[in-house]
Image: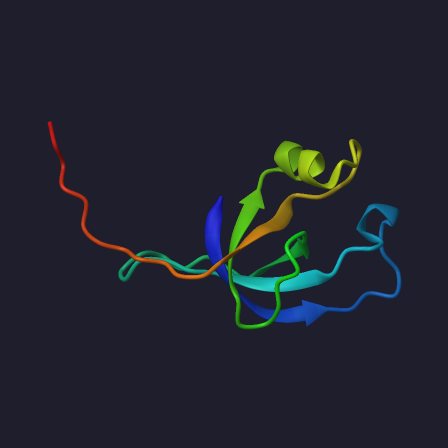
Length: 95
């Protein structure tokens, strides 16, 4: 799973039947300063997210098919939650 920002929506008149009934969102992964940024990608919306929302994205085909309950769906990325806040701090190595 990863944290991302919804930056747009996608409209498609022709799509795989598994995508019918789902909103398609363009999401931009968030990363720590100095980390290599990931490319934006499309995810189906399972959480009623909108542009500007910070979301939790499941990026794994088997899990995505379980969330949508479509066993043979060609789906990899699903927005599964909307985050109210994110707090990041340093983690000390306790060995």
